[in-house]
Image (cartoon, rainbow, N blue to C red; front, side, top):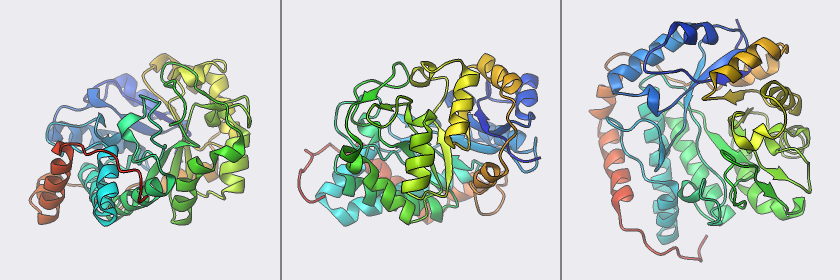
Length: 354
């Protein structure tokens, strides 16, 4: 059975019979985990093993584990700084900032891979304009060249740990005020004025980025649909102009930024017709059932191949993998360095040098 085009959530800390029924549906290709799915390292290992045992090839297992306020697993994991903190290190010392970003990527990947989790939806490459609270300190920096350098370093660390990177939220969520979780953001700039937003993506694509997540943001000068549902953005710009070869995820189609464009089945069709490979549908089991019953589109073999390439690399996790990781000098050094960065007193942002 190939992997389908939907990534869905599960209810709790172990699989319920209804979860199993959903995850065995051929349209499902992945699972995204949340804080409600986590209690302890031992419980997480058991849950991921349950999920991976359901299908062959196994479902893709993902989580939003960026650091700062978006880190779903906390007790027992290294508590990571927000990426803006790494951007400030970069302002003070470019080499030190890049090194810290690489260590963050390695630590995120190494900790998650020791449980069999394939993917963290990171890094955020939105620019830090200071106007969108939903992005806020999740962004590295306001300067696109700084964002590109730090995102490349974090991607290198993830890759070293056996994990692919996912850059988000394409083409950019940092310059709009509204949070797409609760409203429809609209960016009224002309396409030519978005080059700064596209700069990090160009650099990452040139270095083999494996996947992106699209934004529920309408760019009026380009299309009346949000980028996540727009053929102009996904097929025209992302696949065409930028020649991106990797996998394309939508942000959660249950969010308000997508909900303005028809029912959940219609939104899902629009996203697939736009050229997306995998659709996130979270926190609404009723919506999941509507799509499973009503979508009527067979999974694309090309999309399934792109998604399959996102499975984590390295040896299969064993029960002792996380304990062994934490016993290593590399983990101890990286964890200590990132926790020091997290706890450091914030310096004023330096405007030059990026």
